[in-house]
Image (tube, rainbow, N blue to C red; front, side):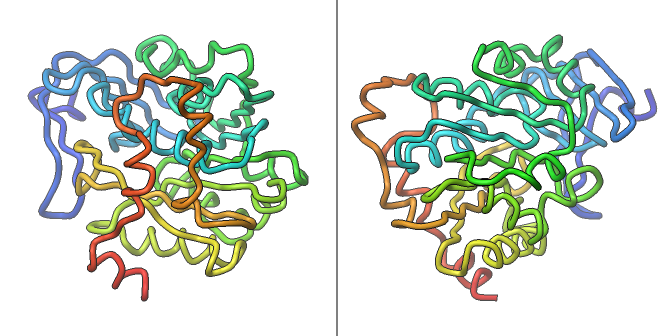
Length: 286
């Protein structure tokens, strides 16, 4: 148990700063060929998944991340029918995408089967996302999967881990170019893009590489408040092949028809998420 001294866990954001919580019990520890996975029961945040010692989600606030990475692009897209999720092995993004019952297909490509297996067993509140019959789960490399796909998807969601190790290739310009080609006309891509406090270098790498693929006027970022992620504010990069800025595209009729019971995303948040603090605007100017 040296990994969890005295049943406390700390994720270090820098050499002098981090996030700490007390563990009730360790539910699972497993080393896959790609990464170490731990699932913890905690006092304050419910069940927590760690990958290589980093918090992927907590039961208490995972809804924010998964709602914002899924619903915003789907309600901005014009009559979406086919969605590709790259990553998202916990199932939370598939869970939210599946709420859009008019979709024809949801393809989820996850590289690490160990993540899927443990999420289904220990965190079914997200693992249930794979239970929907429209979700086609493929265990494989999303980078390779998307290379030969042309004009197949309305929305691509890149729900990756942090930009090193297995996920590093999901942040480069060649990959974003392949994603662009996999999208239909008017298609939208969203990728988690770290934060502006501790990881702005990685955020800007993601944004700039997406701009190389989609054009500088067809990429933006939006933010969400996620208490258990570094800085408490998380960034998503969004790119679109053509049409209006996604901020100004919201299908109110479809939103009302679906009558979703969501906890974070709503029509006001759809637009407000793109309102950026001045210091973030300065970072984006480079």
